[in-house]
Image 1 (cartoon, rainbow, N blue to C red):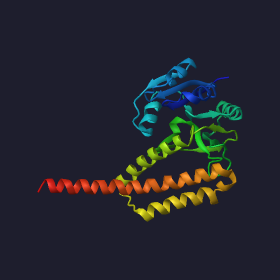
Image 2: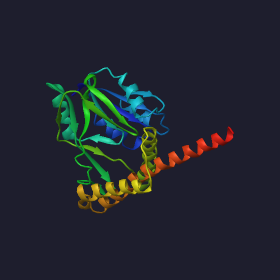
Image 3: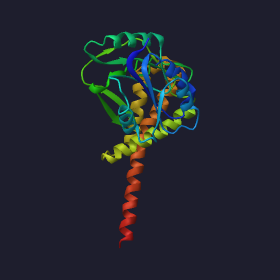
Length: 262
């Protein structure tokens, strides 16, 4: 059964889960894959499953989504990351609602993520509702580098079926992403004039650890919950210590330029 919607996936070297991801979107009238110059079999997999594939060098999440939206012909969009899969229950819910959306402009979907050795049930990672089904003309894109989100301009509803999410192949990949995300976030915050220091960085790191492990009951997720909370400490600490690093480098650069002009 096909519904008048576009399944949208932004990709980069996403061959591991892409087949299952796109198969879970097979009920959509069209599947659009916007690829950021993958070097693996991502584009071949997408094309073999009937997706329309566009290649655009990665300009950041905001501009890439804007590029993708310009090529969407349907009112409704079902947006997934390349490591996400719609559960059968969620597929049925989306089909039913898009056949008769009534006055809704968007639907929030719970996301269940696998981390270390289990699907997390706590730690602030579940149900992790995300707007992934939306009427494009009534939805705004919100960017806070390096993250993105969709903001509906109207009535929404929460669905029950899960998006199944495999965010990291291993802990090394998580650490690599922490390094990337904190660098991008620090640059964004530094450009906005946010100040930082050692104790501020420690404070933000500790706050993230306590939030995830205690307040979000990460301790109930066993060793996976503790590892996640500890990595979240590093995320908060690194983000703010990198702001300090950026400001110190800019200060040194200004001093060097001033001395060169003497």
